[in-house]
Image (tube, rainbow, N blue to C red; front, side):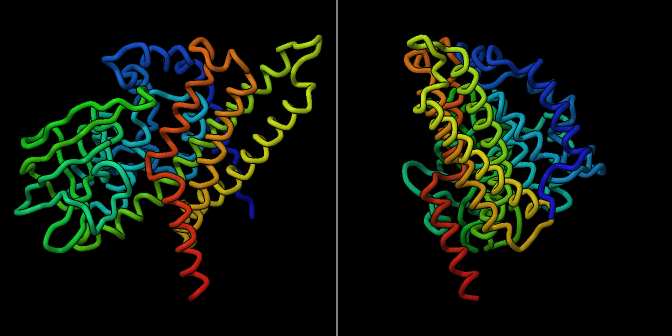
Length: 371
């Protein structure tokens, strides 16, 4: 079985790389970092919308391209390489996938065309503060179609137009759609390690909402959304990890110490080799996840967890080793190493940290082996 990209998918990936290399340099990301009033680049976002990337997997019925999940994975990998300062992950990997997967016809008609046009930017609001938020223990609640509660932190919640919120009602935990421009919604920007992906504290006070998916199935539906998003996040992490390896290798072949390029020293060779091994392991798991996502395979839960774990480990390790390879220069603002370190940490926590996904993988493997 061939898990690699097809010729058409590779062409799409190559074109995405050319576009991003021209329109999303490190200067683009730095411009957002330097401006306290910005948490993303609106011009880059509009350019990507015009390219049709926000609607890659959305059917033509709603204005999308009607392509598959693997095509979106290819784009995600290229976005990861450039640390793109846009809300693509929240809007497309999470919100768009949620609406397409568990939304009803009316919800799809109302939201999917806006996602394609970049007018609807969605986010996922589950966390209620420090620690793990279990669906059965959420405090946010819905009564009579009105949502009350606090969510913190919410990635891209500072700029999002809509949110999928985890809350409970008389059926138990559920997922609810909220228009963040509607009444009863207040938000406050919160600081994060990666200011190019903003976050917010969302306060709901009798905010109108509507159910997403079947009553009483919030925990299962949330797990489905997270699994699908985890594969796409893994590809973005693989792209970032690959760029870290390239950056470290380029510097190691140009920087001289004691009359030799530092890449000739065994310690640096070992760093690069370890980065390569982790990247290839992450890529293999991501490809398997892409297959499971595209084919809606029964193995998706295990494949998504494995891809998430390997991707998080590879990107975090690569970002740190790239910085170490650059030595004292790596810690400075002038060098781009910190851009990837910030994004690696942000992506590593966006859907839950490593302990969460390790536990998910172990439990799923135990259930499968016991069957």
